[in-house]
Length: 218
Figure 1 (cartoon, rainbow, N blue to C red):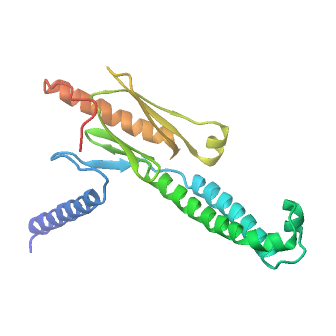
Figure 2: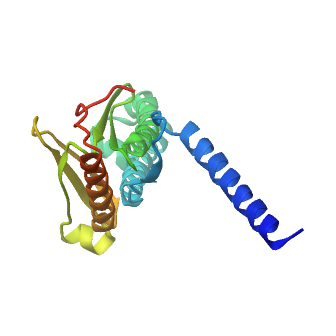
Figure 3: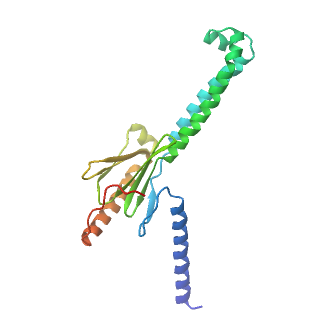
């Protein structure tokens, strides 16, 4: 096999690999890519909120479980004295604290899941912001790079120490603002998104195109 054929074969394999990878990525996305749209990256969010959620969940669930364990024995305990009931009454209400302990764990898992559903994506044509309100309501916005007026990041002192911040995008016309918090290295994402936006806007101007609607349904 000649060098030229080997090079052509290698390039073909690389193109096939990239197409398969992009296709698999698009299947796992919570939105559909248009025909010529390419996913550039997802804004990576910090794991710090998970630590807060799980720490609070462990503390509350453990407290309720200790109360359940102390009261269930129907003996004299600090738990019954603390809530001001007799040991017999404490034994009767102990299952309530067991239920609250299990409920605390469930709330912690749900809170972590909701946090994971809040996401932001950058493509060569749009910025997609997905905001989860509870377990049911989902707010999805698809913003064209043509409509993005300003992209900025902000970090408070704790965010600077832990390496996360808030990314905010404002749009023309409707003066809408879209943001997402706990983004890792937010200023890097701002630079990337700004460069993509500028390139896309300049390309549309060069082709004589017009702005598309602010929000598209997908």
